[in-house]
Amino acid sequence: MDKVTNQTAHLFRSLGLKVGDSVVIFCQNHSRYYELVWGAHRAGLYYTPVSWHSKAEEVAYIIENADAKAFIASSRFEEVAIKTKQLIDDSVVCLSIYNNIEGFDFYEDARSSFPNTPVTDETSGREMLYTSGTTGKPKGVKFPLNGKPVGCAPSDDLALQGEYGDETVVMAPGPLYHASPLMSTRAAHRFGGTVVVIDKFDAEETLRLIENYKVTHMTCVPTHFLRMLKLPEDVRESYDVSSLRLIMHTGAPCPVETKYAMIDWFGPIIFEVYAGTERVGGTTITSEQWLAHPGSIGRVATGAAHVVDESTWETVPIGEIGVIYFDSGEEFVYHGDEEKTKAVYSPQGWRTMGDIGWMDEDGYIYLTDRKSNMIISGGVNVYPQEAESRLITHPKVADAGVFGIPNEAFGEEVKAVVQVVEGVDSNEDLEQELIEYCKEVLATVKCPKSIDFANSLPREDNGKLYKRKLVEQYL
Image (cartoon, rainbow, N blue to C red; front, top):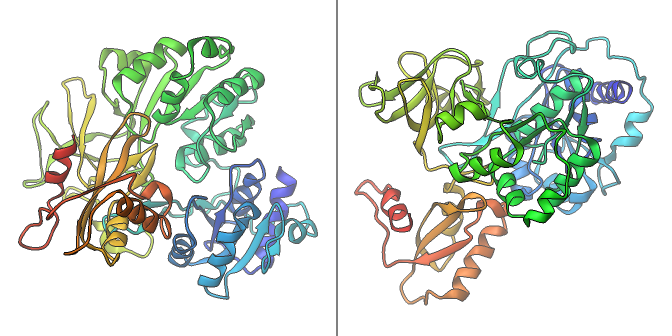
């Protein structure tokens, strides 16, 4: 791995990429994915993995927004990659990996001619992941580069140093364009562990891999738990999962019943981490702590949490609901958007992920709602404005509201309510037409799974949609 990633770093230098420049990676889960990640890391670059469910317009937006100098795409997504290339500036270098893509340089051929020793100016790079924001457009979460050698572990890797070592076998069944799978497996590499890469999650296959590779650590989202728990009992019991020492779950709140069942099955090795891409702070909770405080997301890992009434910016009493702020975490900016960066701060300098909840007398935090209208479906953040903006452009739609409703498997699913223009029939055929209309430009996870029709939508006098009134009808 060291030799190949050194070659990759040299390749990036040969393409004119300097320390602090950005590359965008559009690839499926694969062991070779890490060649790009670690190659960019060794070259001091920002690397942005993009969801392989994205449409060309979405990928092109991130390439442009990130000021990316290179775009590396998997041949598996050739059609989207070619269309993306047509939408971006000609100055962006386009490389294909695994197989050739017409109009792209082939990564493997380009890399092979370079030395396998470090570049002369080797320094640590950093991920720059994108998360949805209040405007509906993804925004890049950018941390400063530390200027240190590649061997100096960042804080997120150091958090796992006590768990990971030469005997560690880590599996993260989620996509590597998400923070938790990427960070947990990257840390495993750093501390000498083995990583088991899954192309696509399958509940029974995951159990087979745990048994076959003696997996010791796994990072999941609650959707993975639900799918494994729904396997027939004889199937679940037929696999030896005793090698597991820790299962970390992130990404979305876990239903209480689901977590009880997982602890009962695997034992008290379930460890929850509440955090965000922005790393403004976070909480952790062990199985034993959770059993004593069911439903909690834990206590703060570093610093302190503050439950705030944003009308007064005062902390609320124990047990009362407010917006959760943290006084710890790394400094970051939303790339190219100073106003969005400022919006996460309180007057005290605390920062929030926009979640609402309360704290008990022992310092354990419980989430009750989301400050924004963010939908979390299967651990993926979805902002409804994108689907609303798409629906409203359809010639048969007068108005539209999009929000999340409960879904047993995914936590939430995307729901839309549409007001049609006068004279248009609202029926099942139109529902499917509108869903497919969204899918033309948006990733499937962002599109409504179902659409209802209404005579009008509850809008305030200033034109803002009073979404809570819609949501209440479906809860």
